[in-house]
Every structure is written in structure tokens, then in C-alpha cells.
Image 1 (cartoon, one colour):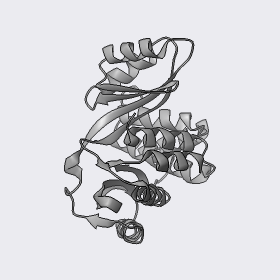
Image 2 (spheres, helix red, strand yellow; image 1 turned 30 degrees about the horizontal axis):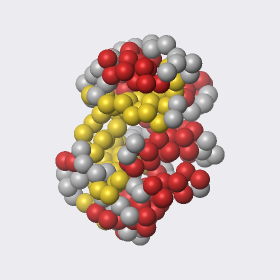
Image 3 (cartoon, rainbow, N blue to C red; image 1 turned 90 degrees about the vertical axis):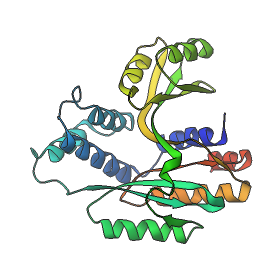
Length: 252
């Protein structure tokens, strides 16, 4: 398993145990609101909303919070926040590319916060397109396997239309084409012995940059700081982290 993929897996596991539930629920609510505003409030008709709701449920967000966010986004539950989706691009330590996706009601504040975190932690803000060319939108699915041979399950997942699978202990990380993501997710969820842990649209790098231990630590720290910003929804990088830094990060 590559250092980039292993880092993504570690982050997911750490995120599931994140104590900052208030900040997490705010982020999840915003994503639900924007998804509800952009389409139908029926999750069967609005795939983005279904993803947002599924993600909220997997993070134990209360049902009433989810429903409130849908109502606010659709305008049936009072005036919601006027949120704008803005993506920033930057460079991290060692010349790695970083994509920062935000939902904000104040783009000046958002831009200032992102720029400050980058410049104070070994990075720089880049022009639009400077980094994005090296990333592709893909579906990312993580499942765990119980009571079955994980290699056999991985082969079934490949047959479901997945582009790639990587096995990590009892988990399988699945990459799917952007356009075929809903179909692959549904097919994977129906496989016997599979538990769906997460599913999202992500920006996946087409090539990565190998980092030494020091640059790996700096980059992971920078990404954590960016993700702590209220307006930031997701951060993606093409960094290939060292094994030593990954072990330290998993144990922190």
C-alpha cells in the first residue's frame, strides 16, 4: 500500500474517533445544506445529498440534525446560511500539491485564513489551475470485510466496476470512476460480508511526490491545521509520505 493511500486510511480511522464533534457536525451540516439546495431533497433523486447524509450517519450525527440541515438547505426550515463553494490550490513542503475545498459565507475571510495557514507552515497559495491539473475527481469507498476471504471480496469489487482496490488488513479501499460512482457504491454495498465504512467524491492525484521524514511530518501537520479551519471541508494532496512519519502520525 502506498504512503499516500495509507495516510488516507489512517486519517479516516482517526476521524472516526475525533473528539471535536461540534466542528465535525457543522461541517457535515453545511455539506448537506449545499447538496439539498443544489437539487432534490429526496436522497434517491439527489446523489450528492445521499452521499452527504450517509457520511453524516456514519459519523453518528443525530437524525434530527440531518433533517434540520436538509430543511435549511432547501429553504423549508427557515433561512439558511448563504454558503459559497470555493476551491483553493497551494504548494506544501517539498513542492507537494494541495487542494483545499471550502464552504464559506465570507470568501475574504476564507482566503485569508487559508493563505495564513499555508505561509506560516511551509506552504504557499497558488493560482487556480496550478495544482488541479494533477488531480482527477474519483469515487473513494472504504469497506471492511467480516467472515469472508478478503482477496475473494476484492475480486468481486473489481467485477462491480471499480478501477482499483487496495487491501489494508481487514479493510479494502476502492477507487471508482467519477461517472460510475453511484453504481459501484450500490454494487459494493450488496456484496456479502461487506460493511460500508465511507464513500465520497475525492480529488485523487495522477502522480505523487515522495517526501522524506521531516517534510512528511511538516505536510501532515499543515493539512491538519488547514482542516481545523471552520470554512474548510476537505483537503487533498499528492504527497507520498514516509513509512516512519506515517507510523508516528497513526500513534499520535
